[in-house]
Length: 237
Length: 188
Image 1 (spheres, rainbow over the protein chains, first blue to last red):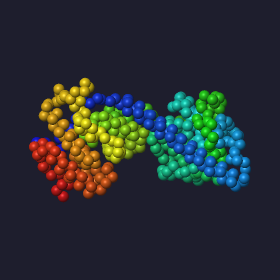
Image 2: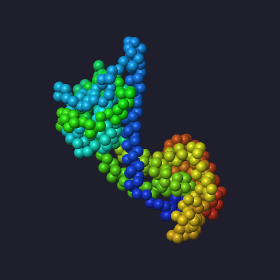
Image 3: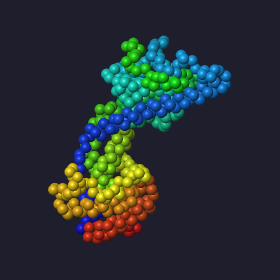
Image 4: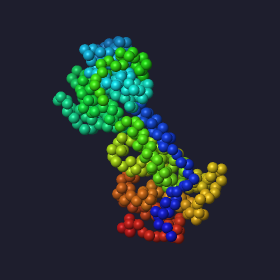
């Protein structure tokens, strides 16, 4: 005589089933996580590109400029190497106080800047965000989180898939939307990242990403000079 | 959370719980070892991606079981899935050796092998959601409310599906193997 539980136990057993190692599951998990972050970057870029197309179209309709959309070749929507202006780091349309100590700029495009540890970048793709410090312009609200206030400005701290985001609304004169600092959980104290985000200024180019798609990867690490990678280091952890 | 930390914790979880998840998958799929393995791989991949959130929630086993159940239900909704009615019947995969011949394992006693085959065949006769109800209620010992939440249906649906499933199992296995001991929702 059997009860259902013991019948199910018997059915669930399979002593000759192959035993998988955690390594295979780890490899699959890492690949999936990498795809997730790459997709997030791509979605963000695609959204901004769509926004830029709409914006350019509207501008053309309003002022009757030439059919090329009114964009010039030196438009700041494409990637720009980091430089320092008034002791601030400038990468494309973003400027901020300093790159955290022990980190360097990997690259970026109109809507994001990617920084990686000096000890080794997780990969060579600036548009992949996993394991990196990213400053990102986002037209839409990325969602709810814990609220913090710093120097009278509101910030939202939220976590997802091993990364922490600090989000704040852009300021007057900047493209309307959110500016975000995203970093691996535990890599930096949140107050430090709020302070970094507070220093970020977003230029109009952030909302005008490269719709031509000539440079999908932005500036790769290898193409930056030593001085360009680490312009102005901030104390960090 | 650092990657090495995530990897270590995840590997530890996999070492400890993978076998149980495959067993659960085996029951859900009525003994289809390959499908069970697919479901577990899908589950563990999702678990790794969400590991920070999962560990904060403090119940990775519960998350994994939920994900596994959802993966199973999602797959059974797809029209192209035909594994369960493949030639030979569900539940036979575990009895095929590497050489391809059907044989009992030397380590198993014959009655267990027979009983296992009968139970898997009986499970294969259930609709996928009925099978999920049986596994969740009677193998994992989840209560009706939790089972309903996990399957995204009402508690009444869980009770009725459970009653139908048990009636089928009794008919398929016979009174000798599965005697009629009413379970709580059957006597309400």
